[in-house]
Image 1 (cartoon, rainbow, N blue to C red):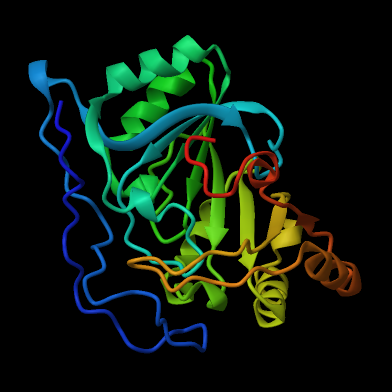
Image 2: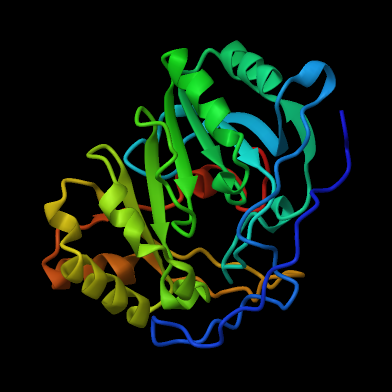
Length: 271
């Protein structure tokens, strides 16, 4: 089994103008492409994925918050959100077979599983993993940036679609056609860095009639993130501010916090 870091392809030249009315400054010139190449199957022809970590913890976000959950974090991401708290997943990872991942997940005995990253949809074989887990009657959440096409996702899975606000630095990467592919159980998430982000999110909620679709619409205050090697970093937004803005807006938005960061030190991995 390889322990080499993830091989992430260089990106094509990025457009300078953002349709969100802002220019992205968080993405370096060497940012990876929007898709990882398929990796040749491992020994015996068994399909593999490049995995950053697998762990058993408490779900900290979404309407599933508070539930025990097995997390499978895939390596690699083509975005560089300024507040990203998993920068280590950009390149750290090793190949593991899907059989191995399924076996480890089952050993935990927890029925809730989240496939996350990085950006999990960059590796096409992730859909084989999701199908296997759904066949075993697991509830499978897929946390995705919304910058990859969600059409191939197993209809039994539940998508957590993270629409990027201008404060992320990656707003121009939102694939808005994904909204029309959401199923009733899927969820929509905004991470808010400031009042401008909040107003932008509210405008998108009204424009796309997100509250009329039946999908939970979640909003999170950003947690403080120090600058890293590939991210700009971001100051925290106090949860009280976001709560007050939601109440003033009159919109039926579900506020959420990152529960796991209240339980463990925010820099702790594997929780």
